[in-house]
Amino acid sequence: MGVQHALMLPYPAQGHIIPMMELSRRMEEHGFIVTFVNTDFTQKRVLDASMKAHTESHPNKGTGCIRLVSIPDGLEPDADRNKLGALCEAMLSSMPNALETLIKDINGLEGDSVTCIVADVSMGWALDVAKKLGIPRAAFWPAAAGCLTVFLKLQELIQKGVITKEGELLDTHMIQFSPKMPLMNPRHFAWLCVGDTAENKVIYRSADVCIKGLEGVEWLICNSFYEIESTTYDTFPNIRPIGPLFIGNQPTQAKPTSFWTEDNTCLEWLDQQPSNSVIYISFGSFTIFDEHQFLELTLALENLGRPFLWVARPDLVDKSGAGYPEGFLGRVAAYGKVVGWCPQKKVLAHPSIACFVTHCGWNSTLEGLSNGVPFICWPYFADQFLNQTYIVDIWKVGVGLKANEDGVFSKEEIKSKVEDLMGDEGMRERVLKLKEEAISSVTEGSSMENLHGFMEAMKRKS
Ligand code: UDX
Image 1 (cartoon, helix red, strand yellow):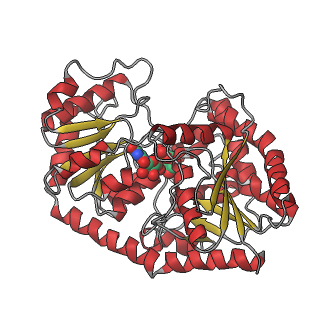
Image 2: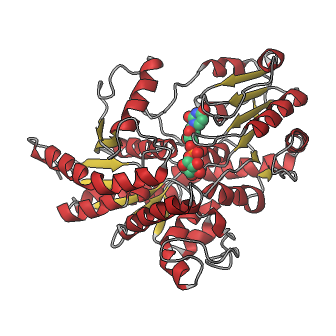
Image 3: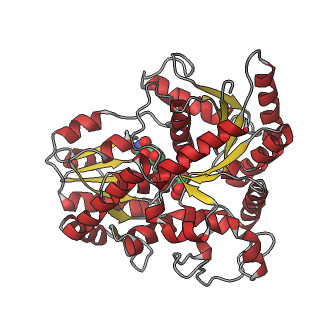
């Protein structure tokens, strides 16, 4: 067997790049050379953030076998990438050719050639490129398997009159693909959660193309583990869980993946806090607050008077937002710390962390679970609502917040849920049990078997 060279293609968003890099590290440990393909835009972002942290002078320096490269996403450099419809459309029309050229360039180098391609499901068009070039391929889903099932069932949803052929919602009743799977709200289908109807249709069209790219793909792997979504895996045996990928993943050579510079001072601050005392608050990379909700959260944190670490990204509040109440940062400085971005996995693993106020992004959900931290759920869109259902109703390791008549989580509600959760020993016991199951799944259980099976298959096929 010659040199194994995997080309990895994440969707260009923070919550996709991080787990794809974790998978890349696993493949590197297993003997693959890895080419990790960002878009030019995200590549610049992660490099700028890493340069500021002085953690890495050049992404491809050193002895590791992961190489970062980038190709254009089809938009102008200064275009707004938060307009997901435009981004998806541009990627679909320009990236297949750019990817093909990149692969041919690599294959033209002496002694090198791409032996397999692993594409994010949301970049499923790349699997057609792989097929055309005769390269073994696999698809990676970085979120819950339960969420993926919606995309695998698009045709059935159309036939049953839940959505139109253009993805518009016709029937708002909760859906369930098998009796034991969680109920899902069609209003939270991912393509319906961003922009207006026209943008929804563009995103749906792109999702449809990506899902069609999965046809004939033998390895559809997912960053999750059997024990937490067993009924979904029993119903959809073609989805194979291989996570949580970050457990036990100790890269010798870190590669930049963060869009913001990590503020590591919070780790020293956590060292000074009592064990099991700190409320950790973070809303991932995408969530935007309105001014009113932001204010309620600041008031709740002041009223709680307990140690807290809050990741308030520089772009967390929408443009109308006025920012912190006057004097807030000074008043809470004795017991709270606010940072723009942190090393979240290290934070969640710190013994001082008592609970996690989260938007329920899938990576955050897995990271909290794998560190035995109970949750206060604050979902915003798309799969985050399903993740909340798992956390609150199925795994019973967290609580949800109830909005008031203005649709806001009030300071009283936030305070009371945090206090309830901090005193709930049953909750902590359950989440610690899931932590053990997560570790066992990747070290000796089905996630480990699937991951090894996948990597061996990629080697055999090449
Ligand atoms: C998005 C979607 O919101 C999410 O629902 C989907 O499952 C994946 O894509 P995002 O909103 O960014 O992701 O949330 P999440 O999935 O939780 O990913 C955020 C990642 O950023 C996590 O890996 C987390 O550890 C990391 N992070 C977050 C940091 O490293 N530092 C921080 O300060 C905050």
